[in-house]
Amino acid sequence: MNVLIVFAHPEHQSFTGTMLQEAVETLEEVGHSVQVSDLYRKGFNPVPGRHDFLTAHSDSLFNYANEQSHAHQNQSFAKDLRMEQDKLNWADLVIFQFPLWWFGLPAILKGWVDRVFANGYAYGGGRWFGNGAFTGKKGMLVITAGGPETAYQSDGIQGPIQDILAPLERGIFLSVGISVLPAFVAYGASYSSDSQKELVLDRLRDHLQTLESKPTIAPPNPTDYDETLRRKPQ
Amino acid sequence: MNVLIVFAHPEHQSFTGTMLQEAVETLEEVGHSVQVSDLYRKGFNPVPGRHDFLTAHSDSLFNYANEQSHAHQNQSFAKDLRMEQDKLNWADLVIFQFPLWWFGLPAILKGWVDRVFANGYAYGGGRWFGNGAFTGKKGMLVITAGGPETAYQSDGIQGPIQDILAPLERGIFLSVGISVLPAFVAYGASYSSDSQKELVLDRLRDHLQTLESKPTIAPPNPTDYDETLRRKPQ
Image (cartoon, rainbow over all chains, first blue to last red; front, top):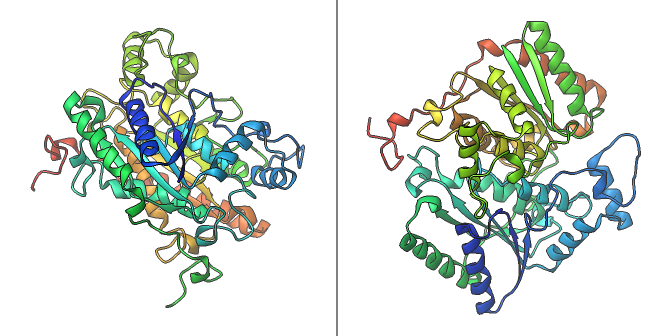
């Protein structure tokens, strides 16, 4: 597979950085091709604006979705977006690797989604979910979380990890047609001992070596929903 | 109440912009004081980095949480962060107003949280949830969502809106001690008729006029959890 890792940690000497290195090595050993979009290192701008486009549909009112659609039709996305879209087109698997901040993606990664998954390019005209622009691709989250695993269970103070990750996976991957592989979560990374970190890296290697035999969650099929977007009776 | 609205839409002539104007007027009519942090207009930078700090704890490894803690102890946050923290200190109610993008906050608002809710200032040293730095404050989401309301029900293609909003409310507001007021959601705003938009604005006014009688969700109490952060037996 062609694997794009979108990486969002400011420090390569962090444990998240070590995990990135391990991931790239493991994926290449297994025979995959890997590209990394290292968002902090490239100074990726996560804020949408007129700088997204080489042309303008309207100079007065700024309607972001309309401008995106216009740029898609005229192939006039700015260079930083075109580069990321090219990598996304190339990828069979997209991995988001990041520290879970406030139950979500760090802003620099959220802005990668906001800007790169543009109207016209990533969705629009009835293309979404099972009919999405990126059907056939897979997506996966690789996360470091601050607390221990017990904090992210149903009786934990943070609540079940699945309640945190499912909206990210559905809202981002599934909605554009990307099937979802099981997330990899490294808990308590910031206060783990070296031997605990080694165990996490072992677990990460195992996870990445067996990607192709893992079950995926497929996007729902839009034709199963009526015109109000509610599921039709079976 | 002192109300801080953190506003994240690039275009004031949008319906989200109209909703902001309506919100400010209604809240002031009721007798509240209002400040708006208009993130796009002020060019807020959502990406963390050394520019967050006037001093440095470590010049080599960039450990963001450690640098934040150091800055809090030395009152050396950069001016843009200090200004936002001052407004947050002043506020009894914090409103996040934004278009729901990919089931989440737009990057510029997510980065406001990532940078302003700094270690040492907003959490740390056992201060979180019911023991959090901002206990006594309230928080509320005011959202525009692309699809119709039926898409965000349990049989809708997007799934229940509560599954999308609860992680945002818990992960951001509750975790720093902020009690949560019911979110206001404007559905299908982008393709509504003028009369439908008027109805939304009416509903928004009603929602904001009766804030003080509305039930809130309180953060869980950390003393109800054991050292593994699981709920103690009752």
